[in-house]
Image (cartoon, rainbow, N blue to C red; front, side, top):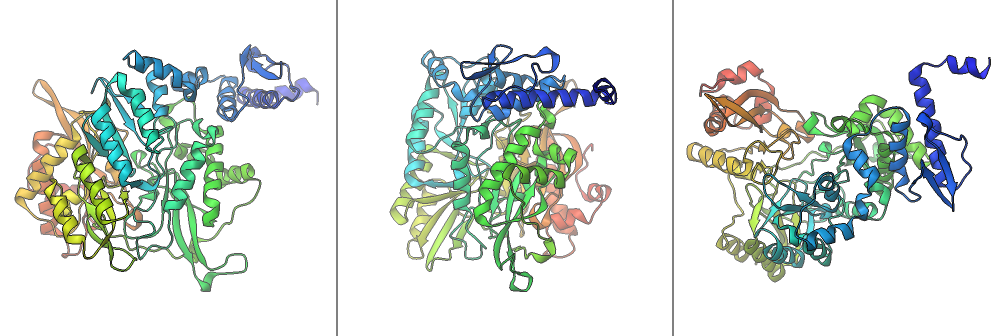
Length: 612
């Protein structure tokens, strides 16, 4: 068959794919200083080598790690598709090379405009107008471990250059808010001087790496995970290609202890499991390993699933790096709504994707049937609040309550001082928007508890406040449809005035479809919306019931829609009252209660009439 006949045998779509593949190969060879195979790419794109550097249509091609993302973008263009505006902005200006530009902007007291608003997020700086005419800075605190001197330093920095408070997040992290334009660089320099580097905490990057909150302290954990979260953090900071993703990415390490890290809600979840002597072999010695789970994104109603790959602890970081590189090549760069790992997995399938990861690593990964693995399920949904006995004899951790994750700078300094006076300065942040003072002796515990209450905080909470999670809301985020933190407190006050729960219940309020507060995994999940009341549009919520994680994994079902907020506290109270009245016994959890009832049955049990 002739070359022309060969070409005619392909469909137009196949021709575009092959053209794009050849173009991508040409770019890669040019970057490496090798001869170009073909003289031009798709659509007449010309490649050239000159002076030791590669160019495409006269534009320089990145020669360093940035080439991974550049080649992925080029393949999209060569296939005849159009990059999203965010991808085009990253192609035209590397966000990592904006330091002098940000310095000049800060010196002039100006905020970014246009696509620079997006690009500056790569440095952790979010211009949050119109919600506030200021920046928010999201930090990176790997594994949620922060030292007392760092917490005190952040409080001082916030007083100097931001609002006088710190926001705790659902990734065991901290945000600074209300940062004026002329204080942007002071924040970036100040955090670095505290050994906190926010690079990549926003934009299309790998977010704060989480681990089990009491890693190394929990007497029941299978393995410490904090060291792995820290190694992953430094791996990201020192591999520039890790900043070339199509969209944001989450990684978590779960050690099997009593406080969940919610690893199944992450793009990559490493879940500790045990291989017993009975299931061990020469190729698989008995011990603790990590299940590799992929594709969690509960805002899109999906949990991470076991891939069949089992890893030794020392393999996790390098495998995560390979997964990210494959995602860089295969992720969607045309549609932001489909640019997460979940959609690559939906398209390729897990087996093919793992094959790509193995090709990236140059070796096969160990596959183990889940039936050979022992999974530990001992999570205590209240363990992050109050006194937690550590495995170190006579020592305790003390969980401090922040119902919606906000503490004043004075409170932060008080907690830092308590940690230094009665402990070794080790403080842990959790994914439940609170923190834990660690290594407190039995003898010192009463003094620490008294001091916590003296500064306006508490270490005890009823089931509502202990499980209350809220995103920033419209008070500080332009996407949010309601002031979620204030609404959450109003709900808690109403519920507490009517009833007391004897089992933990989680209530999650999120302000928009980004689902930062993960409303789909709450027992009761609320997502903000606008509701038409007469001639007005008012703040309201859709209400979902029955979410969960881990062994109680489930996506909450939307039971009530478009409820004006003025009716929401009463409705939530009615839902919880109905739960207490109609559960099968006093040990049935809310998740079990909601799971055994249909949507209509749940509605019919609610005493307060609402328009559903």
